[in-house]
Amino acid sequence: MRVVNRGRFITLEGMEGAGKTSRLADLQAFLQQRGKTVLATREPGGTALGEKLRALLLAPEHGPMTPLTELLLMFAARSEHVQQVILPALDAGQWVLCDRYVDASYAYQGAGRGLGNAPVAALEALLPSQAHPDLTLLLDLPVESGLARAKRRGAADRFEQETSGFHQRVREAYLSRARQRPQRYCLIDAALSPFEVSAAIERAVGRLL
Image (cartoon, rainbow, N blue to C red; front, side, top):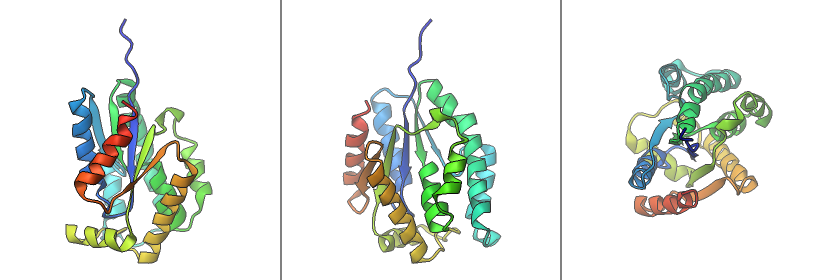
């Protein structure tokens, strides 16, 4: 019986305007050209239920929600995503690329909303250990630059409408996690040109090939 090698799990993180979605598409093409079967997905989202929760979380018309409610909704979507999409793909030998994952909750709800790391860690502990990323690509750039880029995309979502102070806390939390976990994180300067950013990502991912 043929044994299927487990796939690799790569997450892309960063604040608004960092270019994660575009660079994820470039990375997917890069891996497919090297013979990998690739699943590209996102959080919140990735499943029918997750996409409905995403709409609740991002739509400005839903107004403020308590930080804990926001965190619980994120993890409700994430639990479904992990069980229904991420783990089955990895077990089938696919490479999974995810636009945001657990690190985003530490940055946005833990730091941005002021909940701290403890409630995020408690919920993360409920996820299967097999759903731990092999590599996290952190696309970093100054807050003002990222928000300016996001504004050019169109109407701002509920997170993009937050204050610069909120986004600065998010950025600092990401950078802190990258410093504490150098074996998993790769810091990418997202202020570079799209070509340069993709090249840096390909070099980082190349070490997993």
